Amino acid sequence: MSPTESVNSPVTSRLKPKWRVLRSGALYTVGLMIAFGNFNDTKDLTISLYEWGTTHFTHQAELNRLEQLDVGNFLAYTETVFGIPQVVKASRLDTELQYRYYKTDKYLLTLQVKEQRVLGYLVQALSLENQFNTAGPFSPPVPFTERTLDSAPLATLPFADEGFALDNHNLVYFLERHPLAADGLYLNLYLGITEYDTPHPGLSQTLGELDEALVFGDEIQTLESLNAVRERYAPNFYGLSELDNPYMAESLLTRHEFNAYF
Image 1 (cartoon, rainbow, N blue to C red):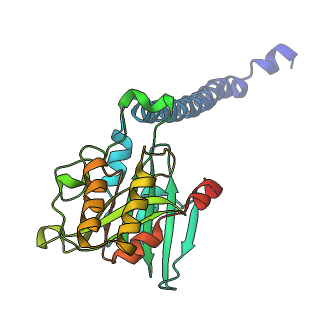
Image 2: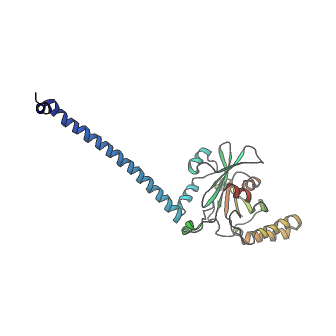
Image 3: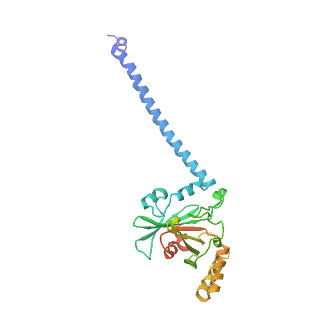
């Protein structure tokens, strides 16, 4: 048999179409895999660009995330939304209580956690860097109210002496408690102002005068000093918690802690 006859034998002729089919199928599969990989890359890029845009030109992504947070959440669920905290600090008032801190470009979130359950949280608005200023200040809505952070002085809310706390040494801050009724699930709403990143003109001195009035002054002096704080300053943080004032005050980082951790 000649070489030509061997090449053109019936067996070889039958194999050629099958080889073409297999080759075409393999090429199609490879092409499909490449296209699918490109699709995933494109999808990831699209999502990244969307998140970048919403973060730099709006606050919607951050607000959507905060809306998913509630007192009573299971910690594992909360971590699916916010991830793992940068810092965890144990309470000195209750050894089973933890404070868990999440810092973003726009806010500092503090969770009060005990036995894997969120007992309370605090949202501190932060001063925005230039690349985030397009959307304006970060002023999230305060739960169970019609107000937003940093929109109106504390004095626009009625004050019943349900307790307040202040400091102008370790951290310049003032906070006050507003117990909620049934429509607020009987939780404690906290509103206040701190100086984590940007000093507020006159706040340290005003709080120093209130602190002095509490120690040495009479009731009238104390009320005047308290009103001076509430009339001049709008809250830049809110908290919602089952816990009382000492725990909320303890959950605030000192200036040294804030600078060391973040």
